[in-house]
Length: 259
Image 1 (cartoon, rainbow, N blue to C red):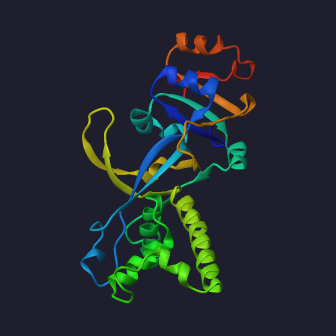
Image 2: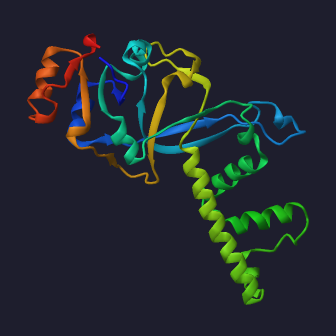
Image 3: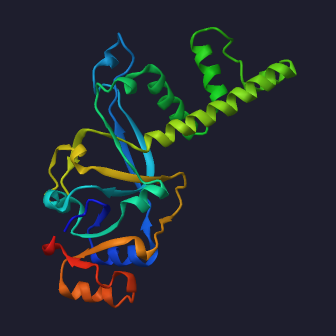
């Protein structure tokens, strides 16, 4: 079967597949490592010395031809659902950008600083507070200076600072969203069958994602008429899917052995 025009989400259990068909694809937490170099001219410039991670809530798909799927399903499961790629694109599902330790723009000090600021924002620290702390570290302002002292400044200056604070938060939101669609070219992987930790080339997974800012339980919904196929392991499971009574997929249920 040609799955060129579909994106596939694989899962490890039949009951998970049932939930997908009845509720939608659940956004899941992923912790993505970003093994970036640090500032030039320091020990942190050595790849891997400094690393960051990005916490995201995503739904993942792969864009791998069925003829090359054998290794992938060992790790991610032999049950799956294929959705129309064109429909997914219209919903915002996007291929990942894979990077490595020498990817030029991700070594930029501005990007690395953005990740540091983003981490602080996630911990409830406002940009202006981070600026104050940096200036204190450089002995450019007194140690006991704090955000409340800004209220003593002229109103015009306070408005400028508030605008800067707001715009910086918006910019960090953009960086955060972009980072949801980054994945390292290769990295450590714990085999889901053997438990062995090995080096895995993630690039070969041809991953697509859609992310959400919410960390609450949320589902990526789809109409049944954009389902291209449903993958199960046994005839009993195929009949079980048919008994759900979803008329749009009655003739689209196939066994993993038929791929």
